[in-house]
Length: 277
Image (tube, rainbow, N blue to C red; front, side, top):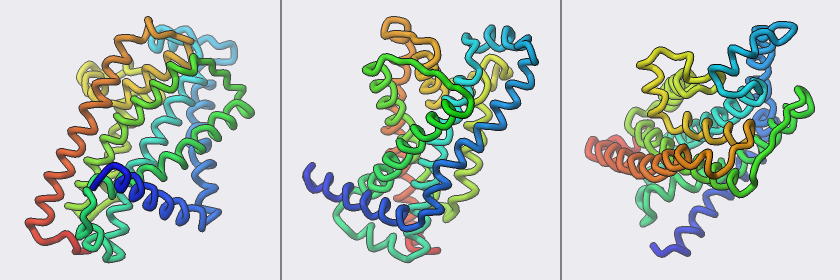
């Protein structure tokens, strides 16, 4: 399959997925409301612990490197919700094809397997982008959130984060195909990432061993870079080391995810359970 044909296939799959989402307006609305409802309790809890005069903000600053706990929480929760939606959509796209009995037909086409998954991921990117902008906008209106950034640096960081997080999705899709279970696998992974990646609190509060595990998760580095850009206004020189680590994740995670997906897909076919519900 040449590049143009692959692009047309991904575009067709993305259009199909977007059409399905747009057909259910109430469900689509939840994409934009649930993330804010997820964030709000953490923000109010942080204000409670900060104290009426902000007495607790100093301790937070020493651990997190910034006194902007509102932005720290909103950026972390928004990106975690992005990852959550990604894993759910990729995982359930495989599961839905199994449930409808169409997975085998898709697998009989000459298209590369990873491109079949990428189509749903592309649609998810469009929805997630609007969702993230909506959440940040609501947080600005509701909580008075203020963010600042170098547009070029922010675009690079978002692109690297996108690649690193989508690499995790390829692994999940293979696991769901083999286990015939999406909800349990994705929910477990989401909760582990939420606990270890420093989504709503800095990694410094974790036990030593948990902090080491947290640094092995791409999301933790994506958060570190994006928070440095959006909350502290850090530039290219200050973030060069963290950007290099994130770039390595952006290369290695998709490669590892695709390798795991291929291995799990081969196991599924050898067992003869590809089309089983």
